[in-house]
Length: 140
Image (tube, rainbow, N blue to C red; front, side, top):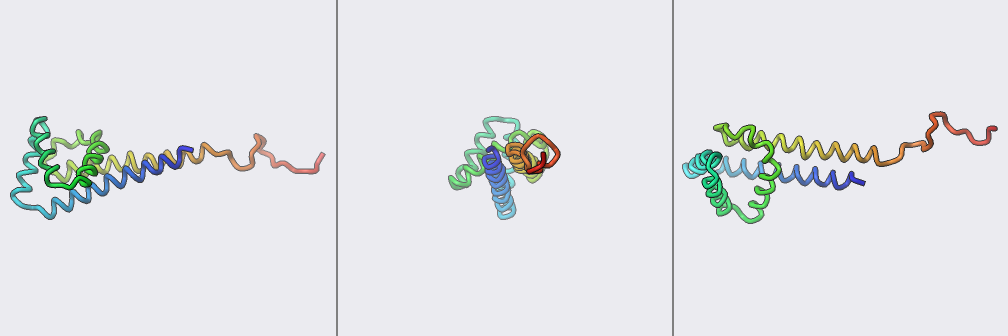
């Protein structure tokens, strides 16, 4: 009963995380310019200053389409529990990759495991009955 929704959640969460990271990687490799380095520096400052974080978010919203922004926002929600582990890292790649990998493990593999577990525990076992001996018809 819970197998299908859990499987859909696992696939959807994994797809969001992978697509968001891929788009991030494309942006970073395409824009190795001074402007990109300034944005990365602003993100490093934003980690400790809430107003700077809001400014970086507004800048990101201007550069990206509405669909891209929704993907990034969903990714931010999914990776938020793990972002504190690497928020002091100097590498933007490390700050994106580690939370993404951990979120994939939790939401992708974790929900897929729960879906398989719910499938196995929600259906009756083969053979029915409580006896371990096979039922033979016609014997008295």
